[in-house]
Length: 101
Image 1 (spheres, rainbow, N blue to C red):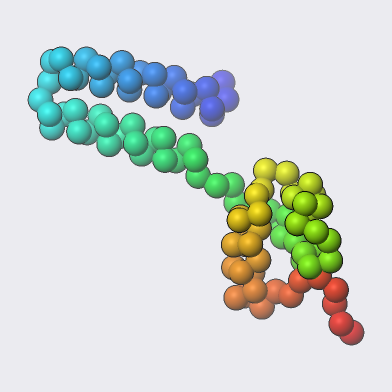
Image 2 (cartoon, one colour; image 1 turned 60 degrees about the vertical axis):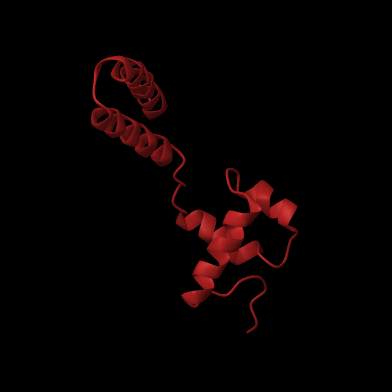
């Protein structure tokens, strides 16, 4: 079973529990269930780590092609994540685009 479906079923169980909790248990227990549900939902949205291949693609093409073309070369990434990664890598000494020799 994939991770997506596992998390989906856990969320369904939590939703069922939270409905029952509202009827049967104290508000403290309700808060624990709802906090756990929020934690799982937050972690589902967590970003994927940048791979070396993606970083090397940025190094090669950033500044030499348009953002639309770059987005095609990096599926699953958006312009904002690319800008953030560029700034992160620049702070670590990376250079981008055409290299001067």
